Length: 194
Image 1: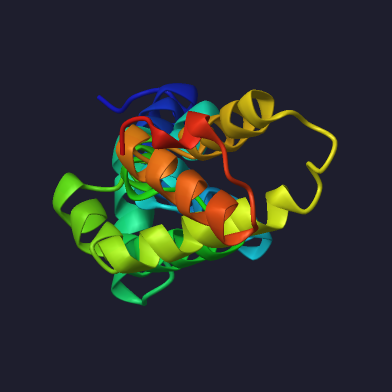
Image 2: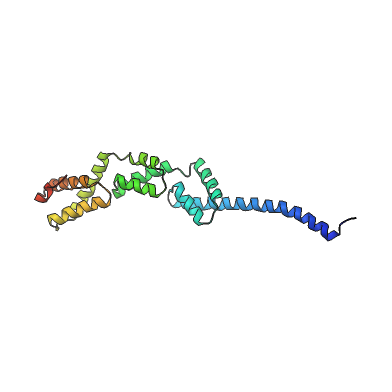
């Protein structure tokens, strides 16, 4: 006995639905990967980003973790995501242009998801001499704008400026003392620690 025609069609559809469902799932996977790639490329055109930053952005956009990891791995393979290169550029830029100290740079990199070893290697490019010289440049620049301040206020402001950039207290006080003396300022307040 043969099945009625409508049952045979239904049976065929089930088979078709299965392969159709698989094709649809595969297409959705490709669409999700393409969407993830587009999101990453858009973000990377604005500025370099770490793998962790991109991953967080993808998850916020509701990209599944496995798709995000797959896309990020591919971008890493082709060199579009490179945490080491990011860390080097970040350290150089933030130290040179903002005068940020080594400790603050390491903290910023960790916050951006850069591995501790990679961050330490990048921060090591700023040696103690370079850090002190940058602190001196910042103080010299700021001294010129502080002619009206009294000695105590000037010292407090200069040391505070360096502290906000995460220079050590000893380095900050020593640099401020040396640069004020070099600028012709002589105060008993400068004979403190350092």
